[in-house]
Amino acid sequence: MRILLAEDNRQLNQTLTISLELEGFTVDCCFDGEEAFYYGEQNIYDVILLDRMLPLMDGTEVLTKLRKKGIITPVILITALGSVSDKVTGLDLGADDYLVKPFATEELLARIRCITRRPSALNHDDDILPVSDIVWHMNEDRLTGPSGSCTLSKREAALMETFLRRKNQTLSRSLLLLKVWGPDSDVEEGNLDNYIHFLRRRLQGVGSSLQIRTIRGIGYCLQDKPVK
Image (cartoon, rainbow, N blue to C red; front, side, top):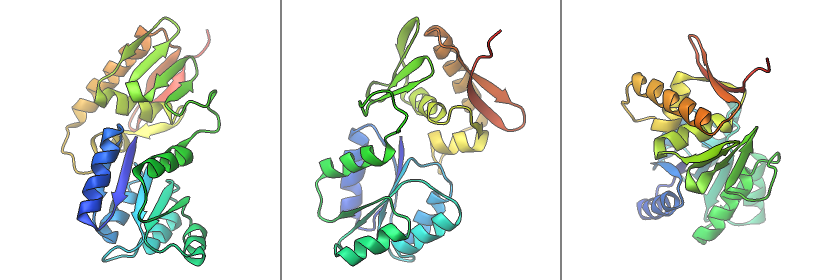
């Protein structure tokens, strides 16, 4: 899961980044509102942690501009402003949650789990994502299917989870590169093709009916194999 952290306090930014990465998240961090908006509008994040008082562009302005562009990524506003009116304003602007400083890391993690939980999940284990005939164990980077299970590398895991959370959606090559390798990476597109090949073998290896189809000129789509 990829998280954008926009926090201008460098010590807090570093502390939160380390804590989130230890929990298995991929974190892109920035320190001002203009950067936060630039990264946020790429639409590659599962969650945005947005400080309300940022230099160059206030967090509420970043949030407003993202929502106007149709970016629906869950946003948690993080701020020292904790009055009821401050919370109401933030939520009315489109924030999904509001966390007042100082806060415990455990509470932040719980709120991230809460806003990313999928209503369609077949169980209440936040670390398990069932899709069609497979189960993705997020904390273990492990895939279980009808005929076995396998553990994926970190890069394979990030790509697999991206597909599983967007089943039946056509994902462009540029989105997959941004989502898995990040906006500042100079990775070659051929690497994506290699990893798609790896994932196809993984799905076959566990006996899944899911397949990653190539959508010519656009990208890829995870779908159930058609019934013959």
